[in-house]
Image (cartoon, rainbow, N blue to C red; front, side, top):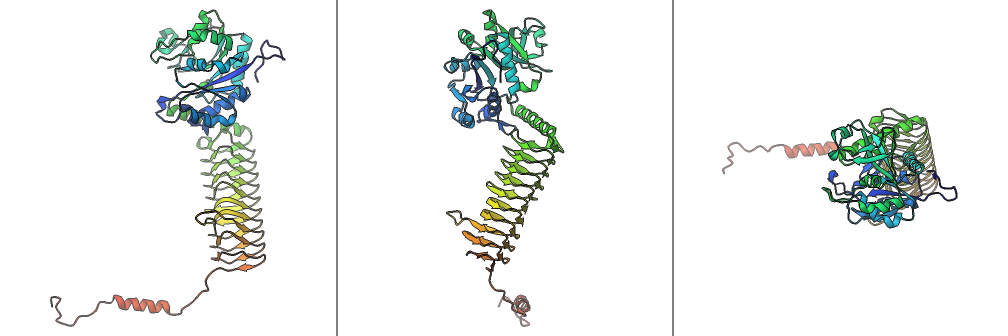
Length: 489
């Protein structure tokens, strides 16, 4: 949380965040709003909102939206932030003009770019604190780049002075100014009162006929107001995304950062560059992640697990000591401690796998509870099923849960044994400790400790195959025609 500058503890300054998120992003050549393109498993805007709401309450955060406003609003509405509509997108300066009513109750406003997802809460807080300490009308965040081409350069009043004389865009910069490597990052803090006194002086006389917030530095300097700069140590934080290539670079950096954070916490990741791990994922110590694994969404993996190559885990919870063999797919699943999955298991939403249970190769589950120590090891579909503890489900078993209109539940109680190639036509219940013979079609409940057989009796006809072969041989033998027979007769 930012400190209060010279304000008393009982009367701290009122601070808001304005996130610029109204643009279309024409260079992306996409119908999707720019701030909704994803990196690190979330939309660009969602990352910025997350950083902002770790510094200030969501009630003090305002997203300024415009292009596809309803779609953008719907994506981050759950965070509790406020929205300001910029119905006509006439530049960043115009965005703050539109937000004047919302921001007027505040003393200071932090301005963030909705397409710069690498910004951290720590940097936002430090920028604000610097602004408050400097008693500035405007504070801008800068970064030093090896190649600053394309960015506006920060012109300081002196080499060691934090005061800014101007921001010069590259096309207007002199040869000497182009050699400056300190660039304007596009993040600002303003004294709200001073901002709205002078924002009316912004001009749209430029090739795009837009009002640029960067021009406020020159306007405030001319008015003898204090404009200062604070430089971040990590230039990567300020990177924005204007092209798909830049999105890919940011995504790579974000995921690399996540991998190194996890490894610092005791997770083994054999080949980090091959793994796709989203920013909200949590993994316990001593878990091993093999190459080419994807762990997405809000997945949680316990300690001492092993996730083998080519598995994809999304929005799932995995307990301690779980083995996920090669090629498993989990989505919205919960797996208890010491269970084993795969290879090539598919756990669909609402699959709850019990402690020490086994779900084997080419087994698919959906809306299933598989009890402690139960096993379904081969070539099986289990949907809409309640399966107790210590149950053995044989290869090729199917719970027929859908009648074409409604879904129905199959219940298999503790200790039951389901023979291979069994079809369980729901709704049906197999009682505790019962056996179902292989290749059975079960359409009625099976009482506790019973044996159920649902297949036709075997019939053997000795010699049938020999007779059939003989009959077929006779049928395909060519008939001999009498000597002298003509086909023309």
